[in-house]
Image 1 (cartoon, rainbow, N blue to C red):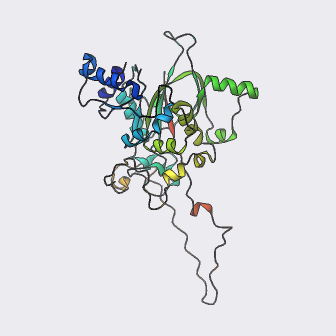
Image 2 (cartoon, rainbow, N blue to C red; image 1 turned 90 degrees about the vertical axis):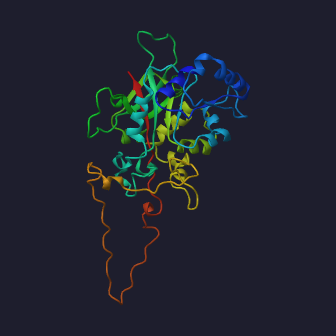
Image 3 (spheres, helix red, strand yellow; image 1 turned 45 degrees about the horizontal axis):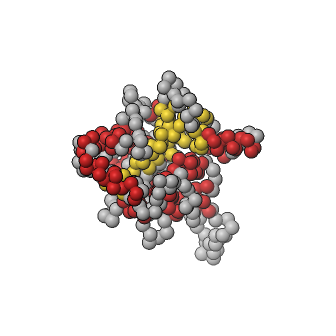
Length: 350
């Protein structure tokens, strides 16, 4: 079955591939890669086999991401695929959609980035609201549906209307912002316990229009920025990517304080002297942040906004001493910048 995800990656131009497997299965997969005619006919370079010593056949997917071997192997943004992937969607179309919506360059045009006055077009972009993720969900009801197939409960909110309409055939019209995700079994447990499905006021305040879906299922196809590895490493209680990583990340976008609890402030605003999230995490030099919007001849609504000028300080006579600021009246934003959570997007396959 691994031929399908490998071929899918090669078709979209990805050649840096790691097959993560328990040590007990490593020799079997290695033999198949070198002997099976379907696998030997794949382009070079060959996929690498990664067999962390502490994982088994029942290890959680988030637990696998915390393994030192995986943390060392993944040095940039990455894609997670299931080993039994059979996907009719072109991988390059998903990758292009993610790059347009959430890749590092172009952070100055990100929605919600108006509150951030620093560089938005550099190699990172998290502080400007960029560098989010993308997941795929597919419909389980239809002509070829399987009776009794498991489903997920997802809530999405529409993206902001783009200035330029997406081209024909683009996946943009089926991409939304994921704000809640859980399994149908968990939803059933919640409704049985509380006799209803409670919706937090924070969700409604943040997203006035939401869409609830109960017949779709997570395809376990994820396009993640590198900082997700750091989030999973900080939160050892996360066991599943689908339920824990994606679920908590989606809620952190509108639930006050959740991003702080997940340790995202330490990831996006690391202490001085420590390496921050740059998007590459290689040992090489990281290109200095620059405002590419000032070099472009194309103007966007974001760039038309002028930064507020600081008001002049009041002058006092020489015999009048200047007032000392009171700690109780000092704005907290001066010492702690607002935490903007990059969104997790959902491609809902029709």
